[in-house]
Structure formats: C-alpha cells, structure tokens
Length: 213
Image 1 (cartoon, rainbow, N blue to C red):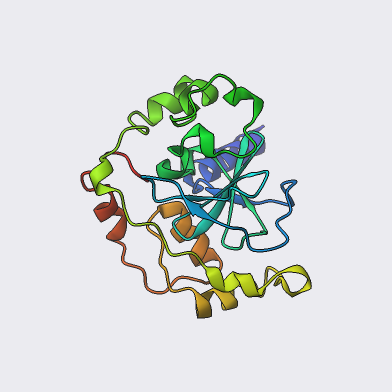
Image 2 (image 1 turned 30 degrees about the horizontal axis):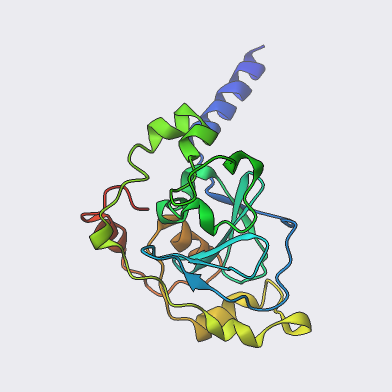
C-alpha cells in the first residue's frame, strides 16, 4: 500500500510539472498539395488563403495553417508534414479570417455570416470562449504586416519535394523571416530554423491590438 501511495505521488508530481504540449506530430490530414499553391492576401488581414484549393488552407506568420474537419494543423512547408495544433494555441489572426475564405467549410459553419469570423466560441464551447474573451476584436489600424511568402518552395514539387529531415536546412538557407507568435517560434526552434529571435517581439505585437496572438 505504501509503495502504491509513493507511486501515485510521483505520477501527480510529474503531471503537475510537465509543460503543456502546444503541437504534436500528425501522420496525415487527408489533403495533398502537389505543387506550390497560389496564395492571396485576405483583405485587411495579415493572412493569405489559397483560392485554388478545395481546402481550408492559409499562410500566417511564416507557417501554413489548415483546418481539416474540426482540427487545425500547421507546417513550414506547403504539403507538410503537418502538426496538430490545439485550439488554444491557434493564432487569433488565423481564427479571425472571415468564413467566406474557407474553401471547404465544415458543416458546422452552415448559417454563419460569410463576412465575419467563424463562431469559434459557439463551436468550442464556453470554456474556450471564457479563456479567449475579445479574440474577435482588434485594432485594425495596428495589424502587423503579413509575413513574406516562402516562394522558394515553388522549386520543390512532385518527386523533388523534400523529406521532413531535409526541410529545415532548405528553409534556413532560403527564408529569413522570424515569426512573432509563440507557437510559430516554438515550431521554428524545434525544427532548427530559429536565428536568434528577439524575445520582445511578442510584447510589441500586442501593442494597441488587444488579444492578437
């Protein structure tokens, strides 16, 4: 009995001290983008969308973002590999993209206003809504500039598309942008793409914007 109690204490301590995971590796998300897609800036937003794809495909803060079903995924390359992102870590500017720019809207979007962001609070529930009050309100005069597109990736399609282990080196050599959001910075660091980022950038991004992420 005493040993069981000690084991339980160790397990609880480990759970309390473990850092929350923001992303996890995904084995596949059901979409295939064989060539670099056309990306168009969403008016008034620092986010691009892909009008030619039958997918909810976006580019923001140096990363590609995809909504597939009820899940968000991100990648630094246009055809993955993709990482699952918990709803609490998806940047607000991605969530603010109006409904009309989702090229394959899930069924729960039905009836939502095309010119407004999806009703994430209604979909994800009151706990998410309470934790993210004001996510759909921001200073439109202080919107950050959109990240440059990694157009060098156009050279890599079909059989030339790089394996996951090759991607960080190619990205580092050809794409100099450093992300603002915490989840994007973590992704870059984990994949060896960081270059001495300024830790104060997150704070500057929040200036006069409300909750921006």
